[in-house]
Length: 114
Image (cartoon, rainbow, N blue to C red; front, side, top):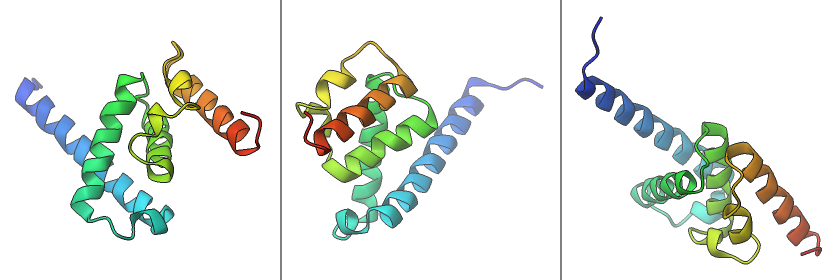
């Protein structure tokens, strides 16, 4: 069976839309207060921006992107420029290691240690 590049693009687009839809449902159910005044279209746009920003930091695994999107939902679109998140995201570590470091920096910040 031969798969043409158009078919690969269609499949990729379908998978991305499916992920965005799942994340929109998840974010809306988990972050009720933060998304109360956000339209479905705005939420999907925020998620798509978050996916692109996560990718720019080397965070591409679905579970790690989900974690990144949780930070976006909690702290806003620009959380990645904050003094606690920016240095972690600028590290050379990738994916899960980077997200683990981000979790540690957030816990330290919340506990008053940083």
